[in-house]
Length: 308
Image (cartoon, rainbow, N blue to C red):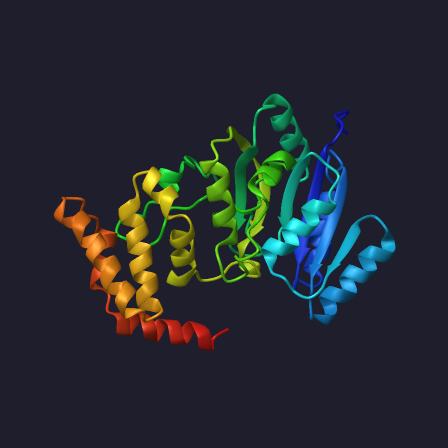
């Protein structure tokens, strides 16, 4: 057991994870460095098993359970948990994921080593199936210029920073917390971490794995629609411009306006994007965004809505 004193608060938010919550909580309770406190936020769940698990954990008394009513979405739930936390450092954990046993010790040591750090991002293990040991993932370069750019021959962005990245309380407070306007269908993590990185706060990389993403469970894995990135580009157009990706913002705005069948905006964003092409700023993603017919995106939008 480490002799280091923990200043870490762990916050877990849940909605419909059921008995998986036990795995998440136990992974925190078995840490080599105990958390300063562990908070579980029930975000207005209507799932019987999830509520039973939360009541059982509350009765055991080892953790604090907050009952969020009504359901407010992940941004509000995380803000609620952070507001109740007592530590100087925050570690988020999705209710269907777990932490490696030394995660908190490694995180505490990294922040102690870098007292100027606003956040510490680490490697993580991605498990695509229950029987697999998982793949070690190194996020690599997390500059906004890199992560907001499209992948080669793709419309997708290169975002690699996990939303559960550990951070200081002071950074969360300085940013005003998570934006409650970004809900479960939105890129609430991306929105928050765009502001964090754009703020210019120092951050450092931790080479050891500090998180296990159980992707196969699917609770927090979903298909991202053009509407989600449209909302990001609308709010943070200036950030895209500042990192030299104004053209990319127009791509996302164009795709989103087609998705919503906003004809006037589609024409405006198409003209803006064409100006970059005429200036020699040619990208595969720009050509695809311009060529994709509105009818196709509208059909995909209707299918996505019907599946929810």
